[in-house]
Every structure is written in structure tokens, then in C-alpha cells.
Amino acid sequence: MLAVTSPQVSWGLLPDNYFYNCLDWINGIEENPQDLVVFFNSDQQFILGKYFEKLLHFIFKYFEGFSLIITNLQVEKNNRTIGEIDFVFTNLMDRKTTHLEVAVKYYMGYKSSAKHSMWIGPNGMDNLAGKIRKFTTQLSMSAFAEDLNDLEPALFKREVLLKGYFFKHIRSEQLPHFCNSEALTGKWLYVSELDKIIRPYKMYTIVPKRLWLGFYFDEDLEIFSGIEIFEAVYAELNSVGKGILLAELDEGKSQIKTKYMIVPDRWPKITDHRKND
Image (cartoon, rainbow, N blue to C red; front, top):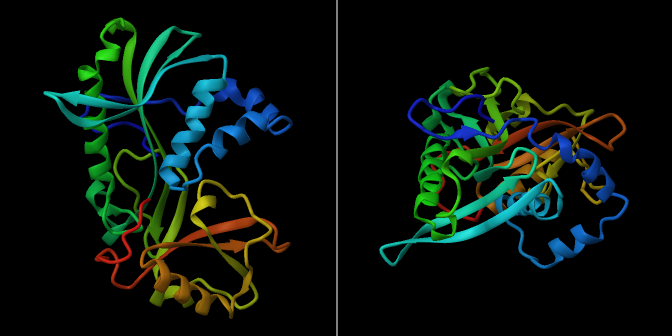
């Protein structure tokens, strides 16, 4: 989601093309998915951020181009746990070792501002500025991890992988500072503005959290007409109490065409229904 890091931070960004050499191997998994199925069946809980981490864990563990050193390592300082390291791995092509912190996030631009603090998550509780600060804290932890003491400093680097979506308000084109010009973008709106985007002849679906990572259309998803979707959106918002993802479908009703984040009218001042992201 970012193109360059803030001048205040000392870490880098994992290149966009970093996993390109894995593509043939990933495509082959579709023909023989057994390892992937077993890997995910070992953990039945579903939290989107943890699911994203686990996808990367699978790549680092099974793709022959990587050697996974540690993952989800609890770090202690002065006999106190100070946090957790996501991944440390070696790329066997260049022999460089990376401490990588990862996240998948969905941020909405509040009040048409480019300030990172004004790009806020669907739950109204987190923002891009806080995430960047957290990355800086997490990446400093490798200095305290005894498991990494023997690594060669010249071949060790600290980087971030931040994936997700920037949602601009329906009346704004503003994006945050330092954002990637090719980052995925959509539109967000308050539920009271729903009539601004809904067309009676279009078809829509509410995308469950498990499918937020892509444009995959699950045939089990309930499809609503432009007339029916209003009641469905209000019911879903009343249930979860925070932003929901609405998708407009193509004419064949088999593919997601456009994504919208719909939030309660009191967003970002949301205090109830605090579920994990």
C-alpha cells in the first residue's frame, strides 16, 4: 500500500515483485493442494490478519527458494515479553536474511485528508499512522531476539509488507502521503449516503470478511437487487457495528466488479461490537 516509507523510519518495503519467482509453484498448488489444505486445517479460527500471515507462512515454509528461520517469535527484554516477530527468513538466491513484519489493512480517508492519522480502519479504532509506528516498534525487536545473534549484520535487513485497500470517500479523490500509486482503491460512504451509489437494475452482495483479500466470488453468497440491498446493508451494520464491504456484481452476476466500504453514520466514533480484525 505504500510506495516509500516516512522519513522518520529506518526500515524498507518489500518490493512489489518479491514473490514473482514463486508464481509457477503457487499455480501448481491448484493441481495438488493437499499440503495447503492440511496446513490450514490445523487452525480453525478465522481472523483476517492471521489468515494473511498464514498464507505467507506457507510460502516461506514450503517454497524451496526460502529458508524460514523463525515465525511468531515472542521477544523478551528484562524478563518481560515486549512483542512478537512475524517472520525472519533467508532468500536462498541472494543469501540475504530479512526480518519481515506484515499486515493487511483497509483504511478510509476521513475528511479528505492525506495525513496518515486520518486514514482510519472500519472499526474506527486504528489508523495508518498508528500502524507505521507499530511496524517501527516491531522491527526493533529483532535486536533483542537471542535467536538472531549469530546473523551477519551486513546481510540482514528489516522490511514491511503492507497489503490491503485505500477507500476514498465518494466525494473525494484524496489519497494518503507516501502511498503506492498502484495500490488498490475503492470508495467508502456513510450508510445514509447509500442511495448515492445504488442502482435498481444492478445486483449486489455483502462480502464476508473471509473473502476481503481478493475479487473471488463465492457461489454461496447471497445476491440482492438494488431494491433489496438497502434492508440487507442496514441489517448487517446493526449486527457487526462497524464497516462492511459491499460489492457490485457484473452483468453475469458471477464476478465482483466494484467494492464499497459502508460505515455507520457515527463512524469513526464506534464504541461497541469491537471484534478482532
